[in-house]
Image (cartoon, rainbow, N blue to C red; front, side):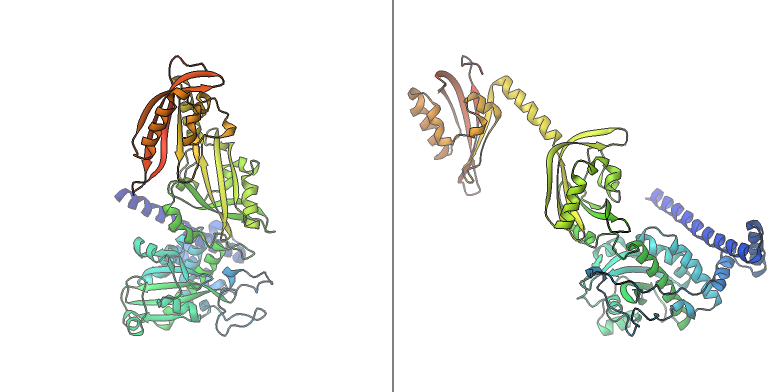
Length: 526
C-alpha cells in the first residue's frame, strides 16, 4: 500500500505541474501578444514580477490572466432539439428564456486576488480529461486553501435522483454506498437541486431541519450546477469545522463550482447535448457484479450527424474476458472496433445497431470468428447475445472452443470404448443421447431418442422380461441397475451392457434417468 500511495502522490504531483505549466504558458502567450516580445522575454517579465511581489510565478500568471480575461460568459441558448428524458431537468428559478441572457456568473463578484486563484482553478479543471477527477482537481488548486476537506459532484437524473460523478475527501465505501441518491430522500444537496438555489448549512442546522448529510463536516455549501439555464447537477463543498463562509468566500466557491459544472458538462455530453456515458451505466453495475461469465454494457459512439461509428465498453462483469486473454479492466473503456476489428464484418456491430434502433434482441452463433490479439489474431468459436438497455446495449458473449474440444474428446473416447450415454428427463420429456448411443442402437440422430419405456422393443424376446423387470426396479424402487441383454437391429443380434442410475428431487421423486450403453465384445461392428 505504501508503494501505491507513493506512486499516486507522484502522479498527482505531475498533474499539478502540468496544470501550473498550462497557466504559465497562457500568461506568456498573452504577454507575447500584448508586448510583442519573445516567449523567453515574457517569462522573464513574469519572473521579475514574481520576485518583486514575493509571489510564485504561477500565481503571477494566474493573476495576469484573471485581470486580462473577462468573466466566463454563459453558454449560448440551444437550438430546438427532440425530447430526451436526460435533458428534462429543472429551469433556474427566475431565469430568462432561451432568447435572453442568463444571470452573470459568480466570478464577476470576485476581487483581483480571488480572480487569480479562480483562473488557476479553472486551468486545473480544464485540463481534467476524466470527470471522476474533477473534484480532486477543484480541491487541490481551488478550494484547499479555504480549509475545504471534501468535494462532491453529482448529476441530476430523469427521476430526480442525483448520481455521484466525482468525489474527493469521502471514504470510498461511503461514496460507493451513496453512488445514487434517490430524490425521495431528505438530503441537503437534493434541496439545492430541487429549488435551484445555493444552500449553506451547518450540521446543527441540518439536524434541526431534518436533513441528512453526506459525509462528515460541520459546514457545507450545496451549489446547483447549470447548463444552458437548467439545473443538471450539484456540487457539495464540505468543511470539517468552521463558521459560515463570508460573502467573498461564498462567491469564490460558487465561481469554482461553475467552472466544475462547465467542464463536467463538456466531459459527460457531446456538442449536440447527447450523453457520452450511458445514463443506465450505474444502474447496471450492481447487476453486472452478480453475473457469471462475460457481460458488458456498451454505449454508442456517434459522429456529428448522430451516426454510430463505434461502441465503447462502459462497464464489464468481473469475470468478463476475451479469447486474447484481456480481462474486464482491460476491456472497460475501450472501443469495440479497436479491440475486435472483425466485429464490423462478422455481424456483431450491425446486430448491436439493430438492437439499439429497433429494440429487438440480437443473437449470433455459435460461429467461428477471428479476434485481434496483442501479437496475432485468435480464431474462436463464440456466440453473442444483446438487448437494448437505456441508450446502449447489454451484451453477453461466450466462447465454445473448450466445449467443442471436450465434446470431441468424449466422442473419440466413446468410439474407442464403444460406449454411449443417454439421459431421460421424466419431468420435461427432454431426452438426450450421445452420438455413440445412436450408433450402438443403429438409430438415426434425426429420429431422436427413444423413450425409456420403449427400449424394450430393441431387446430380443428371450431377454425382454428380465430387461422390463430391471426398468421397473429403476423407476419404481429407484434402484440403480446394471443388466446385460441382447439387442436385435437390422436382422442382427449383439450383446450390450445397460447401466442406469435414478435421479430424484428433494422430495424423493424420480425426475430423470442417466444411463450408459456398452456394446460388448462379440457384437456386430459399427
